[in-house]
Length: 367
Image (tube, rainbow, N blue to C red):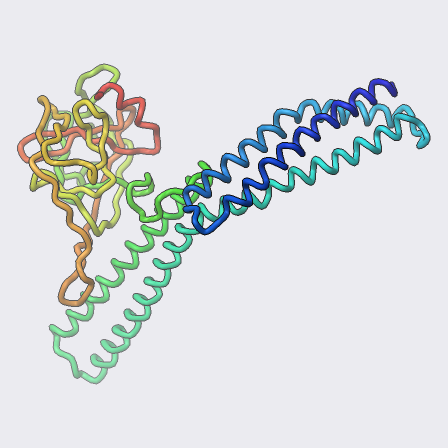
Protein backbone atom coordinates (compact mmCIF):
# COMPACT_ATOMS: atom_id res chain seq x y z
CA UNK A 1 0.00 0.00 0.00
CA UNK A 2 2.88 2.36 0.87
CA UNK A 3 4.45 1.78 -2.54
CA UNK A 4 1.13 2.41 -4.26
CA UNK A 5 0.67 5.65 -2.38
CA UNK A 6 4.23 6.74 -3.12
CA UNK A 7 3.70 6.15 -6.81
CA UNK A 8 0.43 8.05 -6.61
CA UNK A 9 2.20 10.87 -4.81
CA UNK A 10 4.84 11.10 -7.52
CA UNK A 11 2.08 11.21 -10.14
CA UNK A 12 0.27 13.93 -8.22
CA UNK A 13 3.53 15.88 -7.84
CA UNK A 14 4.15 15.68 -11.58
CA UNK A 15 0.64 16.92 -12.35
CA UNK A 16 0.92 19.90 -10.03
CA UNK A 17 4.35 20.76 -11.41
CA UNK A 18 2.81 20.87 -14.88
CA UNK A 19 0.10 23.21 -13.63
CA UNK A 20 2.63 25.40 -11.83
CA UNK A 21 4.73 25.62 -14.98
CA UNK A 22 1.65 26.56 -16.95
CA UNK A 23 0.83 29.31 -14.49
CA UNK A 24 4.40 30.65 -14.65
CA UNK A 25 3.92 31.06 -18.38
CA UNK A 26 0.26 32.06 -18.43
CA UNK A 27 -0.20 34.45 -15.51
CA UNK A 28 2.54 36.91 -16.59
CA UNK A 29 0.92 37.05 -20.03
CA UNK A 30 -2.44 37.60 -18.32
CA UNK A 31 -1.00 40.54 -16.39
CA UNK A 32 1.03 42.03 -19.24
CA UNK A 33 -1.95 42.15 -21.58
CA UNK A 34 -4.01 44.34 -19.27
CA UNK A 35 -2.66 47.70 -20.39
CA UNK A 36 -4.74 50.63 -21.51
CA UNK A 37 -3.69 50.07 -25.11
CA UNK A 38 -5.56 46.77 -25.31
CA UNK A 39 -9.09 47.17 -26.58
CA UNK A 40 -12.02 45.71 -24.68
CA UNK A 41 -12.55 43.02 -27.31
CA UNK A 42 -8.86 42.07 -27.40
CA UNK A 43 -8.74 41.87 -23.63
CA UNK A 44 -11.81 39.62 -23.47
CA UNK A 45 -10.36 37.36 -26.17
CA UNK A 46 -7.05 37.14 -24.29
CA UNK A 47 -8.75 36.34 -20.99
CA UNK A 48 -10.85 33.67 -22.66
CA UNK A 49 -7.76 32.02 -24.10
CA UNK A 50 -6.03 32.02 -20.70
CA UNK A 51 -9.12 30.74 -18.88
CA UNK A 52 -9.73 28.02 -21.47
CA UNK A 53 -6.10 26.88 -21.41
CA UNK A 54 -5.90 26.79 -17.62
CA UNK A 55 -9.31 25.13 -17.21
CA UNK A 56 -8.47 22.47 -19.78
CA UNK A 57 -5.36 21.50 -17.79
CA UNK A 58 -7.29 21.21 -14.55
CA UNK A 59 -10.15 19.31 -16.20
CA UNK A 60 -7.74 16.99 -17.99
CA UNK A 61 -6.07 15.92 -14.76
CA UNK A 62 -9.21 15.87 -12.61
CA UNK A 63 -9.86 12.13 -13.06
CA UNK A 64 -6.27 11.30 -12.06
CA UNK A 65 -6.43 13.59 -9.05
CA UNK A 66 -9.70 12.06 -7.91
CA UNK A 67 -8.13 8.60 -8.13
CA UNK A 68 -5.06 9.69 -6.18
CA UNK A 69 -7.21 11.27 -3.50
CA UNK A 70 -9.27 8.09 -3.11
CA UNK A 71 -6.16 5.93 -2.78
CA UNK A 72 -4.72 8.25 -0.16
CA UNK A 73 -7.98 8.15 1.79
CA UNK A 74 -7.86 4.36 1.69
CA UNK A 75 -4.30 4.38 2.96
CA UNK A 76 -5.24 6.62 5.85
CA UNK A 77 -8.20 4.42 6.71
CA UNK A 78 -6.04 1.28 6.85
CA UNK A 79 -3.05 2.80 8.63
CA UNK A 80 -3.64 5.62 11.11
CA UNK A 81 -0.09 5.55 12.50
CA UNK A 82 1.26 9.07 12.11
CA UNK A 83 4.80 7.73 11.89
CA UNK A 84 4.01 5.53 8.92
CA UNK A 85 5.09 6.24 5.37
CA UNK A 86 1.44 6.22 4.26
CA UNK A 87 0.63 9.00 6.69
CA UNK A 88 3.60 11.06 5.52
CA UNK A 89 2.57 10.57 1.91
CA UNK A 90 -0.98 11.55 2.78
CA UNK A 91 0.13 14.76 4.48
CA UNK A 92 2.34 15.66 1.52
CA UNK A 93 -0.47 14.92 -0.89
CA UNK A 94 -2.86 17.10 1.08
CA UNK A 95 -0.38 19.95 0.85
CA UNK A 96 -0.21 19.44 -2.88
CA UNK A 97 -3.98 19.44 -3.01
CA UNK A 98 -3.97 22.72 -1.15
CA UNK A 99 -1.52 24.11 -3.68
CA UNK A 100 -3.75 22.93 -6.52
CA UNK A 101 -6.74 24.64 -4.95
CA UNK A 102 -4.76 27.86 -4.74
CA UNK A 103 -3.95 27.53 -8.42
CA UNK A 104 -7.62 26.99 -9.16
CA UNK A 105 -8.39 30.19 -7.29
CA UNK A 106 -6.20 32.07 -9.77
CA UNK A 107 -8.99 31.59 -12.28
CA UNK A 108 -11.38 33.64 -10.15
CA UNK A 109 -9.94 37.12 -10.81
CA UNK A 110 -9.57 36.39 -14.51
CA UNK A 111 -13.17 35.23 -14.86
CA UNK A 112 -14.42 38.24 -12.88
CA UNK A 113 -12.45 40.69 -15.01
CA UNK A 114 -13.73 39.08 -18.20
CA UNK A 115 -17.34 39.15 -17.01
CA UNK A 116 -17.00 42.77 -15.89
CA UNK A 117 -15.65 43.73 -19.31
CA UNK A 118 -18.52 41.91 -21.01
CA UNK A 119 -21.27 43.47 -18.89
CA UNK A 120 -19.85 47.01 -18.62
CA UNK A 121 -21.22 48.45 -21.90
CA UNK A 122 -24.60 46.79 -21.34
CA UNK A 123 -24.83 48.10 -17.79
CA UNK A 124 -23.84 51.59 -18.93
CA UNK A 125 -26.48 51.59 -21.67
CA UNK A 126 -29.14 50.30 -19.26
CA UNK A 127 -28.17 52.99 -16.74
CA UNK A 128 -28.47 55.69 -19.40
CA UNK A 129 -31.96 54.48 -20.33
CA UNK A 130 -32.90 54.44 -16.66
CA UNK A 131 -31.68 58.02 -16.27
CA UNK A 132 -33.66 59.04 -19.36
CA UNK A 133 -36.80 57.46 -17.93
CA UNK A 134 -36.31 59.27 -14.63
CA UNK A 135 -36.07 62.60 -16.49
CA UNK A 136 -39.14 61.73 -18.58
CA UNK A 137 -41.15 60.87 -15.47
CA UNK A 138 -40.12 64.14 -13.80
CA UNK A 139 -41.21 66.02 -16.89
CA UNK A 140 -44.53 64.15 -16.94
CA UNK A 141 -45.13 64.99 -13.28
CA UNK A 142 -44.45 68.66 -13.96
CA UNK A 143 -46.79 68.76 -16.96
CA UNK A 144 -49.53 66.89 -15.09
CA UNK A 145 -49.31 69.33 -12.15
CA UNK A 146 -49.45 72.32 -14.50
CA UNK A 147 -52.50 70.90 -16.30
CA UNK A 148 -54.27 70.15 -13.04
CA UNK A 149 -53.60 73.64 -11.70
CA UNK A 150 -54.72 75.28 -14.94
CA UNK A 151 -57.94 73.26 -15.00
CA UNK A 152 -58.64 74.14 -11.37
CA UNK A 153 -58.09 77.83 -12.07
CA UNK A 154 -59.97 77.60 -15.38
CA UNK A 155 -57.02 79.30 -17.07
CA UNK A 156 -56.48 76.89 -19.95
CA UNK A 157 -58.08 76.54 -23.36
CA UNK A 158 -59.35 73.18 -24.56
CA UNK A 159 -56.75 72.95 -27.33
CA UNK A 160 -54.00 73.66 -24.80
CA UNK A 161 -55.28 70.91 -22.52
CA UNK A 162 -55.43 68.45 -25.44
CA UNK A 163 -51.88 69.36 -26.43
CA UNK A 164 -50.70 68.72 -22.88
CA UNK A 165 -52.42 65.34 -22.74
CA UNK A 166 -50.91 64.35 -26.10
CA UNK A 167 -47.48 65.35 -24.83
CA UNK A 168 -47.97 63.15 -21.76
CA UNK A 169 -48.91 60.25 -24.03
CA UNK A 170 -45.83 60.83 -26.13
CA UNK A 171 -43.54 60.90 -23.08
CA UNK A 172 -45.13 57.73 -21.72
CA UNK A 173 -44.62 56.00 -25.08
CA UNK A 174 -40.94 56.94 -24.93
CA UNK A 175 -40.69 55.38 -21.46
CA UNK A 176 -42.26 52.16 -22.79
CA UNK A 177 -39.77 52.10 -25.66
CA UNK A 178 -36.87 52.60 -23.25
CA UNK A 179 -38.20 49.76 -21.10
CA UNK A 180 -38.28 47.52 -24.17
CA UNK A 181 -34.69 48.48 -24.95
CA UNK A 182 -33.66 47.66 -21.38
CA UNK A 183 -35.28 44.25 -21.78
CA UNK A 184 -33.43 43.62 -25.04
CA UNK A 185 -30.13 44.76 -23.53
CA UNK A 186 -30.61 42.52 -20.49
CA UNK A 187 -31.22 39.49 -22.70
CA UNK A 188 -28.23 40.39 -24.86
CA UNK A 189 -26.04 40.73 -21.76
CA UNK A 190 -27.10 37.29 -20.55
CA UNK A 191 -26.28 35.79 -23.94
CA UNK A 192 -22.90 37.54 -23.99
CA UNK A 193 -22.06 36.15 -20.55
CA UNK A 194 -23.12 32.64 -21.54
CA UNK A 195 -20.95 32.86 -24.64
CA UNK A 196 -18.02 34.47 -22.82
CA UNK A 197 -17.73 37.24 -25.41
CA UNK A 198 -18.52 40.92 -25.53
CA UNK A 199 -21.58 41.73 -27.64
CA UNK A 200 -23.18 44.84 -29.03
CA UNK A 201 -24.87 47.05 -26.44
CA UNK A 202 -26.71 49.29 -28.87
CA UNK A 203 -29.87 47.19 -28.94
CA UNK A 204 -29.36 46.60 -32.65
CA UNK A 205 -28.81 43.37 -34.52
CA UNK A 206 -27.67 41.24 -31.60
CA UNK A 207 -30.60 38.90 -31.65
CA UNK A 208 -32.34 40.71 -28.79
CA UNK A 209 -34.33 42.99 -31.07
CA UNK A 210 -37.70 41.41 -31.81
CA UNK A 211 -38.36 41.46 -35.57
CA UNK A 212 -41.61 43.16 -36.48
CA UNK A 213 -43.74 44.95 -39.09
CA UNK A 214 -46.00 47.97 -38.74
CA UNK A 215 -49.77 47.62 -38.64
CA UNK A 216 -51.29 47.26 -42.09
CA UNK A 217 -48.55 45.00 -43.42
CA UNK A 218 -50.35 42.38 -45.48
CA UNK A 219 -49.75 38.70 -44.77
CA UNK A 220 -50.57 36.04 -47.37
CA UNK A 221 -53.06 33.55 -45.96
CA UNK A 222 -53.21 29.88 -46.96
CA UNK A 223 -56.41 30.40 -48.99
CA UNK A 224 -54.75 33.09 -51.10
CA UNK A 225 -56.37 36.04 -49.36
CA UNK A 226 -54.47 38.86 -47.63
CA UNK A 227 -54.89 39.93 -44.03
CA UNK A 228 -53.28 42.85 -42.11
CA UNK A 229 -50.67 41.44 -39.74
CA UNK A 230 -52.39 42.91 -36.67
CA UNK A 231 -55.52 40.89 -37.52
CA UNK A 232 -53.77 37.53 -37.83
CA UNK A 233 -54.61 35.26 -34.88
CA UNK A 234 -53.15 32.06 -33.41
CA UNK A 235 -54.64 29.11 -35.25
CA UNK A 236 -54.95 30.98 -38.55
CA UNK A 237 -53.39 29.34 -41.59
CA UNK A 238 -50.91 31.40 -43.56
CA UNK A 239 -48.92 30.61 -46.67
CA UNK A 240 -45.46 29.45 -45.68
CA UNK A 241 -42.50 27.74 -47.34
CA UNK A 242 -40.90 24.42 -46.43
CA UNK A 243 -37.15 24.37 -47.03
CA UNK A 244 -37.19 20.60 -46.64
CA UNK A 245 -39.86 20.07 -49.30
CA UNK A 246 -38.76 23.10 -51.36
CA UNK A 247 -42.33 24.25 -51.86
CA UNK A 248 -44.92 26.68 -50.53
CA UNK A 249 -47.90 25.47 -48.52
CA UNK A 250 -50.12 26.18 -45.53
CA UNK A 251 -48.74 26.77 -42.06
CA UNK A 252 -50.43 27.32 -38.69
CA UNK A 253 -49.82 30.50 -36.67
CA UNK A 254 -48.65 29.43 -33.22
CA UNK A 255 -48.26 32.85 -31.60
CA UNK A 256 -48.58 36.57 -32.28
CA UNK A 257 -46.51 39.38 -30.81
CA UNK A 258 -47.02 43.12 -30.41
CA UNK A 259 -44.79 45.99 -29.35
CA UNK A 260 -43.63 49.55 -30.01
CA UNK A 261 -40.85 50.65 -32.34
CA UNK A 262 -39.17 53.97 -33.02
CA UNK A 263 -37.01 53.27 -36.07
CA UNK A 264 -37.74 51.50 -39.33
CA UNK A 265 -36.51 50.48 -42.75
CA UNK A 266 -38.90 51.04 -45.65
CA UNK A 267 -38.33 48.50 -48.42
CA UNK A 268 -39.40 49.16 -51.96
CA UNK A 269 -41.22 52.29 -50.81
CA UNK A 270 -44.07 50.28 -49.23
CA UNK A 271 -42.97 47.66 -46.70
CA UNK A 272 -41.98 49.09 -43.30
CA UNK A 273 -40.04 46.82 -40.91
CA UNK A 274 -37.55 47.20 -38.10
CA UNK A 275 -33.85 46.51 -38.55
CA UNK A 276 -33.91 42.96 -37.12
CA UNK A 277 -36.41 41.26 -39.40
CA UNK A 278 -34.87 38.61 -41.63
CA UNK A 279 -35.73 38.34 -45.30
CA UNK A 280 -34.90 35.40 -47.50
CA UNK A 281 -32.46 36.48 -50.21
CA UNK A 282 -31.78 34.29 -53.22
CA UNK A 283 -28.49 32.44 -52.73
CA UNK A 284 -27.78 34.02 -49.33
CA UNK A 285 -30.22 32.49 -46.86
CA UNK A 286 -31.63 35.19 -44.59
CA UNK A 287 -30.47 38.80 -44.27
CA UNK A 288 -31.68 41.33 -41.68
CA UNK A 289 -33.44 44.39 -43.04
CA UNK A 290 -30.66 46.79 -42.06
CA UNK A 291 -28.22 44.84 -44.27
CA UNK A 292 -30.45 44.75 -47.35
CA UNK A 293 -29.59 46.92 -50.35
CA UNK A 294 -31.24 47.98 -53.56
CA UNK A 295 -30.90 45.29 -56.18
CA UNK A 296 -31.01 42.38 -53.73
CA UNK A 297 -33.10 39.52 -55.07
CA UNK A 298 -35.61 38.50 -52.42
CA UNK A 299 -37.23 35.08 -52.44
CA UNK A 300 -40.78 35.58 -53.68
CA UNK A 301 -43.83 33.38 -53.97
CA UNK A 302 -43.62 33.35 -57.77
CA UNK A 303 -39.87 33.76 -58.19
CA UNK A 304 -37.14 36.24 -57.23
CA UNK A 305 -38.25 39.81 -56.44
CA UNK A 306 -35.77 42.63 -56.97
CA UNK A 307 -35.63 45.10 -54.09
CA UNK A 308 -36.14 48.58 -55.53
CA UNK A 309 -34.87 50.61 -52.57
CA UNK A 310 -34.13 50.75 -48.84
CA UNK A 311 -34.87 53.85 -46.77
CA UNK A 312 -34.07 54.31 -43.07
CA UNK A 313 -36.38 56.27 -40.78
CA UNK A 314 -34.61 57.07 -37.53
CA UNK A 315 -35.47 59.09 -34.48
CA UNK A 316 -36.92 62.58 -34.77
CA UNK A 317 -36.20 65.33 -32.28
CA UNK A 318 -38.46 64.80 -29.30
CA UNK A 319 -40.61 67.86 -28.70
CA UNK A 320 -44.23 68.86 -28.39
CA UNK A 321 -44.28 70.02 -32.02
CA UNK A 322 -42.24 67.16 -33.47
CA UNK A 323 -43.42 63.86 -32.07
CA UNK A 324 -41.16 60.85 -32.49
CA UNK A 325 -42.56 58.26 -34.97
CA UNK A 326 -43.55 55.64 -32.41
CA UNK A 327 -45.69 52.95 -34.01
CA UNK A 328 -47.29 49.70 -32.93
CA UNK A 329 -45.52 46.73 -34.52
CA UNK A 330 -46.43 43.08 -34.94
CA UNK A 331 -44.97 39.68 -35.71
CA UNK A 332 -46.34 36.14 -36.00
CA UNK A 333 -44.76 32.77 -35.19
CA UNK A 334 -45.46 29.93 -37.64
CA UNK A 335 -45.30 26.29 -36.58
CA UNK A 336 -42.49 24.11 -37.99
CA UNK A 337 -41.46 26.25 -40.98
CA UNK A 338 -41.09 29.57 -39.10
CA UNK A 339 -41.60 31.60 -42.27
CA UNK A 340 -44.42 33.52 -43.94
CA UNK A 341 -45.06 35.85 -46.87
CA UNK A 342 -45.64 39.61 -46.66
CA UNK A 343 -46.62 42.05 -49.39
CA UNK A 344 -43.88 44.08 -51.05
CA UNK A 345 -45.71 46.17 -53.59
CA UNK A 346 -47.54 43.74 -55.85
CA UNK A 347 -45.31 40.79 -54.90
CA UNK A 348 -45.14 38.43 -51.95
CA UNK A 349 -41.73 37.96 -50.31
CA UNK A 350 -40.67 35.35 -47.76
CA UNK A 351 -39.60 36.41 -44.26
CA UNK A 352 -38.49 34.46 -41.22
CA UNK A 353 -40.50 34.72 -38.01
CA UNK A 354 -37.20 34.70 -36.05
CA UNK A 355 -38.52 32.57 -33.23
CA UNK A 356 -36.13 31.29 -30.57
CA UNK A 357 -35.38 28.20 -32.66
CA UNK A 358 -32.17 27.93 -34.66
CA UNK A 359 -33.19 29.01 -38.15
CA UNK A 360 -29.78 28.42 -39.71
CA UNK A 361 -30.55 24.81 -40.59
CA UNK A 362 -33.68 25.96 -42.39
CA UNK A 363 -31.68 28.49 -44.40
CA UNK A 364 -29.77 25.81 -46.25
CA UNK A 365 -32.70 25.24 -48.60
CA UNK A 366 -32.69 28.89 -49.64
CA UNK A 367 -28.98 29.11 -50.41
